Image (cartoon, rainbow, N blue to C red; front, side, top):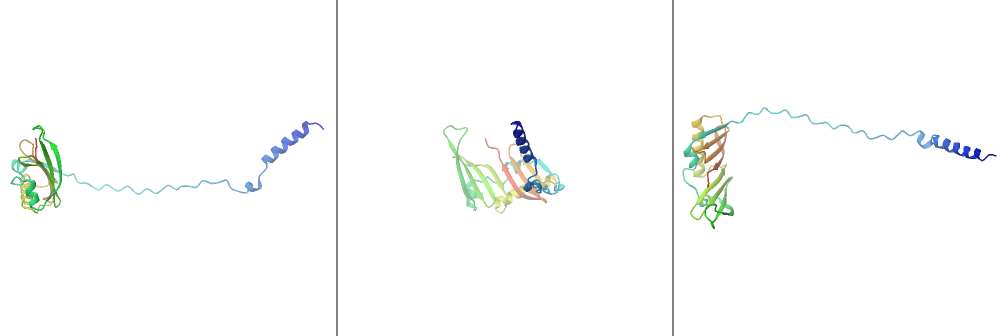
Length: 187
Protein backbone atom coordinates (compact mmCIF):
# COMPACT_ATOMS: atom_id res chain seq x y z
CA UNK A 1 0.00 0.00 0.00
CA UNK A 2 1.16 3.41 -0.85
CA UNK A 3 1.92 5.74 2.04
CA UNK A 4 0.12 8.56 0.30
CA UNK A 5 -3.21 6.83 0.40
CA UNK A 6 -3.48 6.63 4.21
CA UNK A 7 -2.43 10.32 4.52
CA UNK A 8 -4.98 11.35 1.90
CA UNK A 9 -7.63 9.27 3.58
CA UNK A 10 -6.78 10.82 6.92
CA UNK A 11 -6.97 14.36 5.51
CA UNK A 12 -10.27 13.62 3.80
CA UNK A 13 -11.64 12.12 6.98
CA UNK A 14 -10.65 15.22 8.95
CA UNK A 15 -12.31 17.51 6.42
CA UNK A 16 -15.43 15.38 6.49
CA UNK A 17 -15.62 15.48 10.26
CA UNK A 18 -15.08 19.21 10.32
CA UNK A 19 -17.80 19.88 7.76
CA UNK A 20 -20.52 17.61 9.07
CA UNK A 21 -23.40 19.01 11.11
CA UNK A 22 -22.97 18.69 14.84
CA UNK A 23 -26.18 17.21 16.27
CA UNK A 24 -26.12 19.68 19.19
CA UNK A 25 -25.84 22.75 16.97
CA UNK A 26 -27.74 21.48 13.93
CA UNK A 27 -31.18 22.14 15.44
CA UNK A 28 -30.29 25.17 17.58
CA UNK A 29 -31.01 28.68 16.37
CA UNK A 30 -28.16 31.11 16.15
CA UNK A 31 -27.83 33.23 19.29
CA UNK A 32 -29.89 36.39 19.18
CA UNK A 33 -28.91 39.74 20.46
CA UNK A 34 -31.42 41.27 22.80
CA UNK A 35 -33.43 43.84 20.94
CA UNK A 36 -33.37 47.17 22.70
CA UNK A 37 -36.47 49.17 22.11
CA UNK A 38 -35.91 52.87 21.81
CA UNK A 39 -37.20 54.63 24.88
CA UNK A 40 -40.09 56.89 24.35
CA UNK A 41 -38.98 60.47 24.61
CA UNK A 42 -41.38 62.73 26.45
CA UNK A 43 -43.07 65.17 24.18
CA UNK A 44 -41.29 68.50 24.32
CA UNK A 45 -43.12 70.93 26.51
CA UNK A 46 -44.81 73.66 24.62
CA UNK A 47 -43.15 76.90 25.53
CA UNK A 48 -45.39 79.09 27.58
CA UNK A 49 -46.11 82.38 26.02
CA UNK A 50 -43.81 84.48 28.14
CA UNK A 51 -44.67 88.07 28.56
CA UNK A 52 -41.63 90.28 28.26
CA UNK A 53 -40.71 91.80 31.58
CA UNK A 54 -40.84 95.54 31.42
CA UNK A 55 -38.09 97.43 33.25
CA UNK A 56 -38.58 101.12 33.84
CA UNK A 57 -35.77 103.50 34.75
CA UNK A 58 -36.39 106.83 36.37
CA UNK A 59 -34.34 109.53 38.05
CA UNK A 60 -35.55 110.38 41.53
CA UNK A 61 -32.75 111.84 43.64
CA UNK A 62 -34.78 111.82 46.86
CA UNK A 63 -35.66 108.13 46.61
CA UNK A 64 -32.19 107.07 45.43
CA UNK A 65 -30.09 109.16 47.83
CA UNK A 66 -32.22 108.66 50.92
CA UNK A 67 -34.55 105.69 50.33
CA UNK A 68 -35.57 105.37 54.00
CA UNK A 69 -36.06 109.06 54.73
CA UNK A 70 -33.39 108.82 57.41
CA UNK A 71 -29.89 107.39 57.64
CA UNK A 72 -29.92 103.92 59.21
CA UNK A 73 -27.14 102.18 61.13
CA UNK A 74 -26.57 98.54 62.03
CA UNK A 75 -27.57 99.42 65.61
CA UNK A 76 -30.95 100.73 64.36
CA UNK A 77 -31.65 97.44 62.61
CA UNK A 78 -30.57 95.39 65.65
CA UNK A 79 -32.78 97.51 67.95
CA UNK A 80 -35.77 96.73 65.74
CA UNK A 81 -35.24 92.96 65.91
CA UNK A 82 -32.34 92.28 63.54
CA UNK A 83 -29.29 90.23 64.42
CA UNK A 84 -25.70 90.55 63.29
CA UNK A 85 -24.79 87.43 61.31
CA UNK A 86 -21.23 88.24 60.27
CA UNK A 87 -18.36 90.66 60.63
CA UNK A 88 -15.49 90.80 58.18
CA UNK A 89 -12.39 92.98 58.51
CA UNK A 90 -11.41 94.95 55.40
CA UNK A 91 -8.55 97.36 54.74
CA UNK A 92 -9.53 100.97 54.23
CA UNK A 93 -8.55 102.01 50.70
CA UNK A 94 -7.95 105.66 51.65
CA UNK A 95 -6.44 105.57 55.13
CA UNK A 96 -3.28 103.49 55.50
CA UNK A 97 -3.17 101.15 58.49
CA UNK A 98 -6.93 101.51 59.12
CA UNK A 99 -9.05 98.38 59.17
CA UNK A 100 -12.81 98.75 58.77
CA UNK A 101 -15.54 96.12 59.11
CA UNK A 102 -18.30 94.80 56.88
CA UNK A 103 -21.24 94.05 59.17
CA UNK A 104 -24.11 91.88 57.89
CA UNK A 105 -27.45 92.13 59.68
CA UNK A 106 -30.47 89.86 59.05
CA UNK A 107 -33.97 90.92 59.96
CA UNK A 108 -36.89 88.75 58.93
CA UNK A 109 -36.23 88.11 55.25
CA UNK A 110 -34.22 91.31 54.93
CA UNK A 111 -30.43 91.49 54.62
CA UNK A 112 -28.34 94.57 55.34
CA UNK A 113 -24.61 95.08 54.80
CA UNK A 114 -22.91 98.05 56.45
CA UNK A 115 -19.39 99.34 55.92
CA UNK A 116 -18.37 100.29 59.45
CA UNK A 117 -15.65 102.88 59.94
CA UNK A 118 -14.56 104.26 63.31
CA UNK A 119 -16.74 107.31 62.62
CA UNK A 120 -19.99 105.74 61.39
CA UNK A 121 -21.86 102.93 59.63
CA UNK A 122 -22.36 103.38 55.88
CA UNK A 123 -25.01 101.30 54.16
CA UNK A 124 -23.23 99.16 51.56
CA UNK A 125 -26.27 97.23 50.30
CA UNK A 126 -29.68 96.10 51.46
CA UNK A 127 -32.26 93.64 50.19
CA UNK A 128 -35.75 93.95 51.64
CA UNK A 129 -38.65 91.57 51.11
CA UNK A 130 -40.66 92.45 54.23
CA UNK A 131 -41.71 96.00 54.94
CA UNK A 132 -43.19 95.80 58.45
CA UNK A 133 -40.76 98.15 60.21
CA UNK A 134 -41.24 101.93 60.05
CA UNK A 135 -38.22 102.32 57.74
CA UNK A 136 -39.48 99.42 55.57
CA UNK A 137 -42.84 101.16 55.25
CA UNK A 138 -41.12 104.46 54.42
CA UNK A 139 -39.08 102.71 51.71
CA UNK A 140 -42.16 101.02 50.23
CA UNK A 141 -43.98 104.36 50.24
CA UNK A 142 -41.13 106.20 48.45
CA UNK A 143 -40.67 103.46 45.85
CA UNK A 144 -44.44 103.25 45.34
CA UNK A 145 -44.64 107.02 44.80
CA UNK A 146 -41.84 106.84 42.20
CA UNK A 147 -43.66 103.96 40.49
CA UNK A 148 -46.93 105.90 40.28
CA UNK A 149 -45.14 109.04 39.02
CA UNK A 150 -43.62 107.24 36.04
CA UNK A 151 -46.84 105.39 35.19
CA UNK A 152 -47.76 101.78 35.79
CA UNK A 153 -47.00 98.61 33.90
CA UNK A 154 -43.44 97.93 35.05
CA UNK A 155 -42.26 94.62 36.47
CA UNK A 156 -39.03 96.17 37.72
CA UNK A 157 -38.26 99.74 38.58
CA UNK A 158 -34.73 101.17 38.58
CA UNK A 159 -34.48 104.41 40.51
CA UNK A 160 -31.23 106.35 40.40
CA UNK A 161 -30.02 109.80 41.36
CA UNK A 162 -28.95 112.55 38.97
CA UNK A 163 -25.37 111.25 38.80
CA UNK A 164 -26.47 107.59 38.37
CA UNK A 165 -24.42 106.69 41.47
CA UNK A 166 -27.03 105.48 43.98
CA UNK A 167 -29.53 102.89 42.81
CA UNK A 168 -32.73 101.41 44.14
CA UNK A 169 -34.04 98.39 42.23
CA UNK A 170 -37.60 97.31 42.98
CA UNK A 171 -39.50 94.22 41.81
CA UNK A 172 -43.16 94.98 41.33
CA UNK A 173 -46.23 92.76 41.12
CA UNK A 174 -49.65 94.17 40.28
CA UNK A 175 -48.44 97.64 41.18
CA UNK A 176 -47.16 96.53 44.61
CA UNK A 177 -43.55 96.59 45.78
CA UNK A 178 -42.43 92.99 46.41
CA UNK A 179 -38.65 93.25 46.75
CA UNK A 180 -36.20 96.13 46.92
CA UNK A 181 -32.43 96.12 46.52
CA UNK A 182 -30.56 99.24 47.55
CA UNK A 183 -27.09 99.87 46.12
CA UNK A 184 -25.64 103.14 47.41
CA UNK A 185 -22.40 104.51 46.05
CA UNK A 186 -19.44 103.91 48.35
CA UNK A 187 -15.94 105.10 47.65
